[in-house]
Amino acid sequence: MVRLITHNLLACHVKGCNTNNFPLQFRDIQIELREAEFNPDFLKGFMPKIEWKALVDAARQLGDTSLPLEQPEMLDDEFLKNLHHVLLEVKEV
Amino acid sequence: MPLQYLIVFASTHPEFRLPELSSVGELYGFTVTLPLALEDRDPTRPYMVVELDQEEHAFALARRCILVKAIYEFYGQGSSYDELHACTRANEARWAHYVPDTSFRFIVTAHNHKIPQSRQRDVVESFAYMALLGKIEMKNPQILFGCFEEYSSRNGLLRSKHEGDGQFRQVYFGRLLVEGSARQLVGIYDVKKRAYYGNTSMEAEISLLMANQTLAAPGKLIYDPFMGTGSMAYVTSHFGGLVYGSDIDGRQMRGKGKVPGVIRAAKAYGTDSRILDLCTFDVTRNPWRCGGLFDAIVTDPPYGVRAGAKRLGRKKELNEEQLKTFMEYRNNPRVDDQPYIPPTKPYELSHLAVDLVLLAQHLLRPGGRLVFFLPTVTDEYAELDIQSMVCEGMEVIANSLQDFGSWGRRLVTIRKTTDREYPRPSFEPEQPAEAGHVPAHKDFREKYFQGFKKDDGETGGQTP
Image (cartoon, rainbow over all chains, first blue to last red; front, top):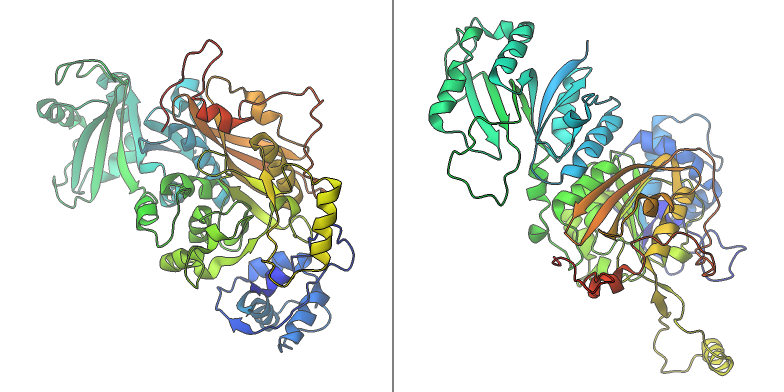
């Protein structure tokens, strides 16, 4: 039961599991939405740490297609709002 | 010219005062200039005159510092009233505009002493040269002048009521600018009033001081690798931080009930949306995908007295036969098998401390801070204990003792000073053959339960 930001930061840590250990696969999932405070500065600062493909794939698996396949150069408000929603407000249960 | 302010400190935790001032200054991007003379910047003294560039910096300190009781605009000080008055006269420009028509009130008070009422009146009248024309208002005056006499501690000495009156070390005078408003958080975050807590929860005042050391603010990502009942999460999220917590044993974070205890308590404080996730894992086998993630790591590691630190592994490795049986049942589980619970072994405190600094070196962003408590034996502590833990790119910026007599705990703040990236630490214990420095906090648990016996058999002080 994690937010997608957490899903994007955790790799498999089983002993000896060093390849193909990220991202973790979803199984039997439901989603829950929880509101969080919007902070564009946090999002901008956090962007370089995101594995973009993993995030977009995870979001699409959960039925959210608001993010573009390529990490955009221009960070407009709408994009940041979508990113905020996907990263911090979507929780898989 | 920088402005001078008189800080009146709360009487608790003297060693934490100056680190807090400079942390809050750094957070808001200003410097707090301490007095030059060593005796004037002695943190155990209750009053201190500091310099700030702008008045709003004083307001920021009063809003955020837990140990600031009030801040006064500084007018004068001295070891006698003659000196004080001379100084106040010289600073006339600071108070002249209150002379014509401002209602006012005087308070005359002392630290470690009670001034008799008759002399309080004399003191107020000795300021007659200010020739204040405004009305004296005991209730709701427009401004409040404070005069503070500082007496040395006379704890344990028998004395009559007003003995030594007037024999103060220093006297200060100023105008009340702002009362510290952060101190009320100590009551709000009182553990006893919390929706969820345990026997290892950290008291509110200290955890707030730790939160200030982390520079917690909106949008900062903060991690507690030994979360327990989440004491650090509530205060750091109060200041706006986004918090991750992990623990090797999730039961402390979850508690009973459907919603995890930590989330329930955070909800009562209105900060549950800032607790990002709680994860159950051993920090020595942590699943963080990469380093450079967090703005701060803040934790009160278990030191073996109330709760012991654990890590995955066996105290004794399995022999060949046991290992064979283990692997067989692992690959072919029997129908009535309980879920596998991995075995744990103790995590010795001095190893944990070294590992924690290495972990912070890996996981912190440049400029990020590691803030943690380290218990230590008072008589055996040496500065090298802390210095020997520090690794490349990390710098100790504060080390404050909370003294319990024969033992104490030190709040250590370490900053990552480089933007270099460091690999994940191996968490392998050092080779025992290495004849390095043995810190006083090694085997703290054993020392604690032996009552800190010294070699000559004498027992240490009381335990809290």
